[in-house]
Structures are given as structure tokens and as C-alpha cells.
Length: 169
Image (cartoon, rainbow, N blue to C red; front, side, top):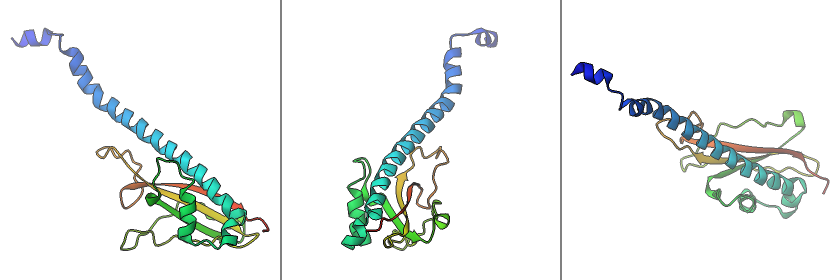
């Protein structure tokens, strides 16, 4: 009977598939997750360009917009698949382009879950302004996690940064 089992070839295909399928499915999930993150990144970059434009043309400064009013206006630039609730905006002016911090910040949160280390300081005419739009994107594929979780909340922070010099308005 043992000799008959060793000579049997009818189940070889299903055994081979069972060996290869987990790796194939993991690769497929990784490709999908990465594609979605790039798609979100593109939408956020487009919104960041428009958000920075209303700062460097002086519209924000002339209207005296607060951080929440600016965020409301920026949310109109977001694609429909992005929620304003997961968006954080950091606007800072600096003295020159060399000192403009464009690195992804490490966010720290207060007791209510809001980032405590972001600012809203659009500067004045002629200032160099760094505008960062940060979006918390949930990471799918929990057992694999795909190495993209970067936040203490388990979400991936997607950042779009624009550095510009404000016009003399």
C-alpha cells in the first residue's frame, strides 16, 4: 500500500499549489497595498500643491485664516476617497531654503489623539514656507503587515511636502 501511495501522481498538482499559493497570495497583497499607497500619495501631492499655492499667493495671510479654517479650505482640495478627519497639516516658515525641514516628522499625540507637535505659521510676504500635508492611512493585511506601518497607532503616515517663497502681496 505504501508503494501505491508513492507511485500515485493524481494529487501532485494540488500539493504543489498548496506549497506555492501562500507566497503568491502574499506577493499579490503586497503589490495591491503598495499600489494603493502610491495612489493615495498622488492625490495628497496634488492637494498639497493647491494648499501651498493659497499660502504663497498671500490669500491665507490676507484673510487671516486660522489653522482650522485653513484645514477646511484644504479639505476641498482632497480627492473624494480621502477623509478630512485623517488629515493633519503642518505649516512653518523658515529663514532660507537650506533650513527648510522636509523630513517626515515623528508625530506625538495628546490625550485626545491629536498630534501635539504640528504648527500653523504661514509667515509674511517674502517668507519661505514649508507646507506638509500628513494623512493617516490604515494598513491592511494584518498578519503580513508588509512593513509599511510607521505610526504608533498602526497607520501609515503619508506625507506631501511643498516648499515655496511667498509673493510680495
